[in-house]
Length: 189
Image (cartoon, rainbow, N blue to C red; front, side, top):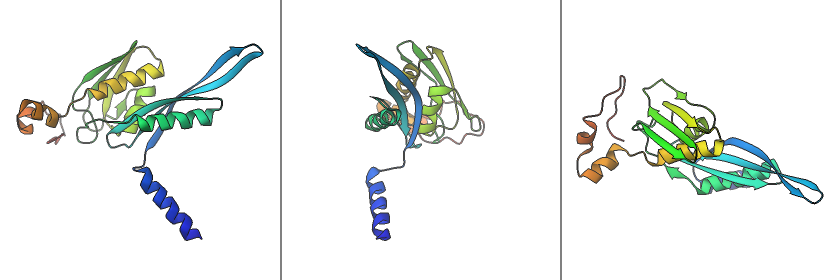
């Protein structure tokens, strides 16, 4: 009997796919004013990623916090996107992202820098698998807009492979002019 349960768990995990990191970014208590007073509910913002270049975010609302988190997680899994990473640890180039009043600047960093950036952006980078990055948020501190601005920037990142294909050149020709960071052994993106 015990073997059947372990086999079932293994099968369920295999169907689920890769192990995903789930990060809770924000929970808001929201109130609906009705005739008898207020009805309270909760809104959750989640970031989900596989730490290998895929990330997504989602929102969910419910009467209880765990239900809101579950809905947000399911929404995030449906909205995942792939981001090309340099050496699997940082982004290929500096970029700015905007969403609403949120504006974020992301810069690639040499090995050992770590994640410099806080709050909602850090959750996105950790779920994505980025280890070295410098980021700055200008404008709003609203977690929803910061996450969306960060993902907007990440969506526009292009790897040398993509650029070479678009220009009809070799990858080596595209990255030959890139300034080499100390300690970097970048060959292909």
